[in-house]
Amino acid sequence: MVFAGKRPNNLGVSNGKLAPCPNSPNCVSSQSTDLVHTIAPLTFTSSPEQAIAHLKNIIQSLPRTKIITESEDYLYAEFKSALMGFVDDVEFYVDRNNNVIHVRSASRLGQSDLGVNRQRIETIRAKFS
Image: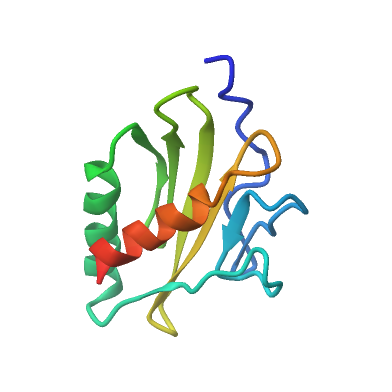
């Protein structure tokens, strides 16, 4: 677990917002406004409860994934890389008013992630829709 790093202390939802991405490019967030970090949220037409249950099933079907925190409108999971055991922190926040799930996926260590966080969210989006 050399490359796991420490779990960040800024996770979770504060005033309807997930934590902003750091300056490094190894993070994407649907609440970010800059081009490097921005990514579209997940959208749903079902009930929020069905949407989060569906999302949870998808996350649990992915390899080396562990759901850490789960509530009515929030899901936090750790994704571990196959090779070196790098850990990425991935958060989902249900915005019931707009029928979207905001996402944030960030590497704990290093600078570049070679697009892994963005690719992960797009993979989840493809399975989700």
